[in-house]
Image 1: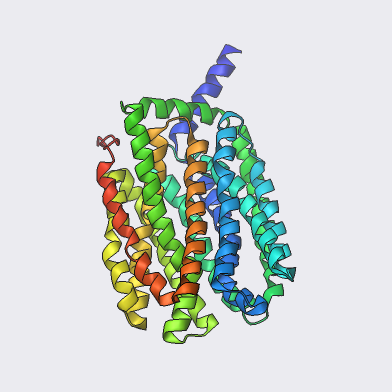
Image 2: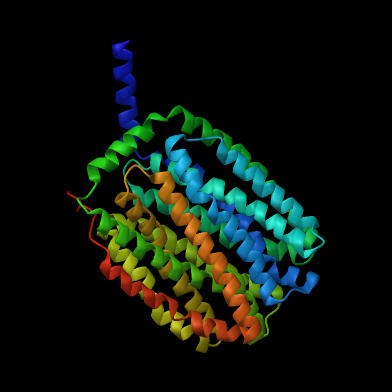
Length: 407
């Protein structure tokens, strides 16, 4: 019996130190499907606005309901699953999302729209903390790379969603949203297999905690708290600005340059694809050069381009949108892993807090910016939001906690 226990411990230790790419790419693909379905909501805004005669304030309220339901539960889900992991909750999350999209396809009133996006939000709040933990367990210590692969899936899904909406929903109408349920069915199949791996490797969770404890830097509670607050302010800056792009970029292009709904969706796809590319770059660069420097570059480095965007013609608007997407997206993986290293052993809670806060800021940003657009103009929204990345200067106050690599 002792030999058997020792063998299991050795196997688990080996797995804990090995990057399990099959699991990372599987959970990334599940993230792609999850966020593809979520991206249907903002991508259908021009269609819903026309069908229901919505104001920009109501469009912002739809996003607010979605993002709030997606954000409020996440820290609590993460806190609970830190103590009692629930591998099959990933499947339950996908079922909530499918239900929301099915209801969205047949919604006949504004209140039905709100209920449908709330269901999708609940699915998101369950999915992200546990899926992020799976990425952590499969990282083999390459935490930035693992989070980048995981986030790449989500951002790729967010990019593909508007393109598919332009091809499938825009020509035929709201009812064709139902076809996106097929992505959810595929997601359930993949997540069922991942849940089996997760359940069979629960010992990695304990070893992962121990590894984090070994890496813990000697920082006071006050310094950790200040660092978390700074990181959340940077999340506020990033996702408030991202809300202006994901929710209103199509309206901006239609209003300023006279594009059609379909053409504007292709420009949104271009921006979201650049976000996916930036996400993949950020994590490995953070592993190599230090996460603080990537965070600094990503948020503050986007400012010159966001400040130019409101004054550019259509060609340069597209170019600047791509640059902004790549630069500003490189931060999130670095921010998330940096925060996880500040609070070792709290992967679920930190993931839930930061994913939840990101969704919440995106929702609040959409609501506030929609109200401003109604009161002024959609062009003015891009003028005031262009200053948000300047908040990146706060990264100066983050301590250097990453150990240098020894080669």
